[in-house]
Image (cartoon, rainbow, N blue to C red; front, side, top):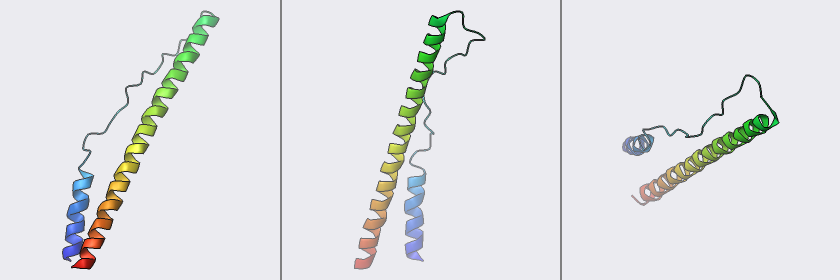
Length: 87
């Protein structure tokens, strides 16, 4: 029972580690009703690619953060397991 309470306390502190949800700062391009010329169309397509790149970079940063958090969780559990076996 004591072990369960300690693990719950440990995980609750991890759960509160990031209480503010991150958000991206990517600018969504405005979709024109119609394109005036080829240059405007190419500029829009360029803006779409820039938006896509920004969003993909944000997603990868968040996935990297998840991997780091999971690794920290695994390390804490392993440390606990080693400790509790020595008690």
